[in-house]
Every structure is written in C-alpha cells, then in structure tokens.
Length: 426
Image (cartoon, rainbow, N blue to C red):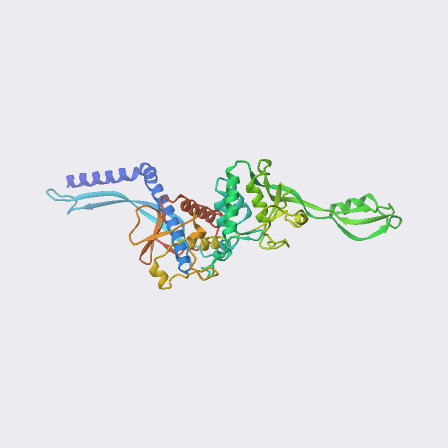
C-alpha cells in the first residue's frame, strides 16, 4: 500500500507540475497557433470571394460568412489507469497532456449596414486613397468607375450578364492615358482647393439710401448671415446681396511638365475639358454626365475656339458599388463550353449578333480559369459544379485586381462595421 501511495503522490506531483507550467505553454501555444489561424482566415476569405464571383457568373446569389471571433481554449488532462492504483506486476499507466479546443463563431454578413455598404457607391476618400497610395491608376479606374463625363465604362456589366455587349473601349483607352501620365512622376494629383460653389445673388430691389436707416449692427448682422449691402453705381441706392460661398472641393490638377503632352491633350479631348485650365473640379455624382451640349467627338486636328466656352471645367464621376465591382469581375470567369451549351451561363452578343468574348473587356485586369483537377499553380482556387476555378499564381494582373477588391471590401464594409448576427459555433 505504501508503494501505491507513493505512486499516486508521484502522479499527482507530475500533474501539478504540468498544470503549473501553463505560463510556459501559453506563449508557446500562441506562437504555434496564431499564424495558423491567420493563414486559415486569409486563405478562406480569398476562396470565399472567388466562390462568390463564380456564383455570380452563373447567375446565383453571393453569400459572405464572416469569422467574428476565434477563441482558443487549452485544457490539461490526466488519465490514471490500472487496478488498485498500480499494484505490483500491473500494466497501469498515467497519461497527462494538454489539448486545444478552439471556438470559432461564424456570422452571416446579411445585416442592414452590410448590405447598404455593399450597394453604395465607393466613397471619394477610398478612391483617392487607392489611387494615391501606389495602386496603378488604370486598375483603380477600370474597377471602380462606372462613368466619367459621359465616357461609359461597361455600366451594364455592373449587374447580371447583359445580352448586348457593353461599351468600354473608349474608357479603356482613357485609363491607359492616365497610366502613362502616372508613370511620369508628379504629373497629376487629387487635392482640395478653395472654389466658389455658390455665386453672389441679388436679394430684392434697390432702395434709396435716404429711405434706409442702417447702423453698424445691421451691417454686422447681415454679414453674419451671409449677406451684404452694396451701393449702386449712381451712389443713390443700396442693394442687399447674398454673398458668394467658397468651400474646399476635390480637384484633379495637372503639372506644368505635362501641359503639352499628347496624353493630356487626348484626356482633355475625350472628357471635353477646357484646355486653358490646369485643374478641374471633381464631382462624385450620378447626374451631370450629359451636361455638355456638344458632341464628344471632336476633330483630331484640334478644337474650334468657338466651342471653348461650352467645354467642361468639371469632371463628373459615377463610382461603382462593391456589388457592381463583383459583377464586373465575375464576367472574367471562364466557364466550360458544356455549361454554355446547357445554358447555365447567359451569352452576350454585339449589335451584329456576333458572340462577345468578355476577356476582351477584362484582359490585363482579371482572369479566372477552370480545369477538371485541382490546379497546382493557383493563387486561389475553389471547386464548383465539378470543376476547379482558379486565379493563376503567375498572373500578376489578376492577383493585383483580386487583392484590390479585397482591400475595398475591408475598407468599405468590414472596417465600417457591417452588422453581424452569430449563427454557428464550432
């Protein structure tokens, strides 16, 4: 019995020593588990986005399932086996160990805030941030812009696959011009500039000065409310005017070193911009695209001075929502011919009835390939309808565009606090 008690005490001592070592196992467990969870979240987020793009290509709804929390719980266990606590000659055993029981909470991202952010046009701040922090301007413009001064960027591609080919060629050419200027450092920038946004206006009729009884307080009160009294030209009457309003507005400013460049001349021609200006106010709104009464097709030899007063001093931009961007990129998903023949995906033709190849629109921006077996050179891949759809690891353009879309989702939706309701705990 003394030997049995000694064995039990030894076992308990080992167990207590193992439990007291938690301060050592804790940091070690973090070192081994944190990066694994990080890689898993990153990998599954990319796969989820690609899966949603493939679904949208097949006219199916997208679905996002967020990982709202991961809790790693470590539990120490001990197991004593053997009859009569290890009698002599028995095969009794003591098992002591630690095991992790991660708790992962999934939340379907279907709240009102999430859907509003997904359907709202991308913000001005986000667009400026992407374009000024190292992203290629043509990539940002092709993905995020729907229309710029009535130059259309495949507006119909921002929804389910249209029957008729969208217009995009002129906008594609425009983005290439901006990219050429971007490669010339310090050629243009987006900034804030003081501009008069509301012109001065006359309020009421002129009154003779001898009928006005104005003191200093009246003038100060009028000024505080944005009004001022002006004496007429004959000096006998006074008028009440609403003072002009100035505010800081976003402008696109070009540097003097590109004033004579072919690229800027072409940009001005396409966007109907007044060539006498070096900066243009940027308006982010859906209306105002058709404000110019001129045809946008100017003679390549130059512009007639007679039409200069009608040229634009503003650049009106309509941006896409995140869902429109996803639809736009979903058309770059190549599908098996049998799926096309079966009508799983819609077909698109041009005005002459010739089938349209969506790769013509997304070439150099984004491409998704398919194969029957799991690809070995994929940056991200998902299996769907018996095929593997993937982005090639050596396709840097597609990887960059895919990462840009992920960044926009994180900035516009996840950082904005889309509502989440826990559904499943594992």
